[in-house]
Image (cartoon, rainbow, N blue to C red):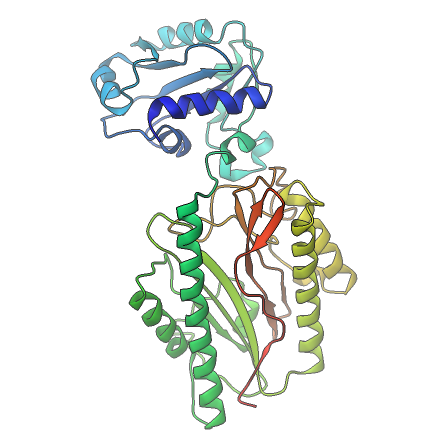
Length: 391
């Protein structure tokens, strides 16, 4: 995407939202979105800057005088109106002049910091811009139009899914075989097998997978180490959470579970509750009966609460799928950690991963979902029953 088309697309999104403009702001990379959206080239940019994109008309870049040459390199778009300042009073005057006539504009801001993923503009800068007489609204939904998947993204994700599913299969097969032969198997051993397979397939990840036996499965972000490494015993549950992808492409992120021996009645009931909450969320997404991330979380959480496990579901229902790391920047399925009002736009992807953690038992089932015009597509296999390991 070139810079001209980026600004043109910004204007299209602004008009569709019924706003007067979008004011992009950054200082030394504190706000990651402007550089992504504008595809900024290399340049020495050490001062704060603003780019105002009105619904109609010419976009205005406001930057420090000392960085004029750097901005010609970073954003060589000849359609821009470039305004320079040196003193802070000049900056205020330029902002007031540029925003004159605007009533409602978007910035990377979230009321009360409710959505941290987009809350990048500091309070002081918000005050400075409001002094120009404008009402500032969140750019949360606008940003999502720049985070959707391409055809190439979808293809890379599908290949990553194949890799993580194969690694998962190898891991559970190792556990199953060892138990049948009455041989020991440890968390680190299984983790090492998964890592080896993912790397052999050219897949990358920001952290080694979660392999959790027994009570460790009740720790949502447990990471096996030499100090905590556990040998699996019959009667214990198993949880494996792994994620991987290709460089700068969407990741695949899954969680599957099993039980060493015949599952207990309690474990089966917990599993069925997690499964039903997952399937309810998938139904809502597929049928397009929800519009925002928080709605899906609330429905699944209500089911888990009605089954008696509400206090044991301690995290959001799902997160957006990221590039180079599992958590992305777009809408989350969340009415717990935050109240995520962002829209489920076609081309965005999320995980659905309800979990119940009782101390001695931990169960989570995680799948990936791509939002489409017709509803949603589940891009990963869906676990229907826990593995019965060593039986």
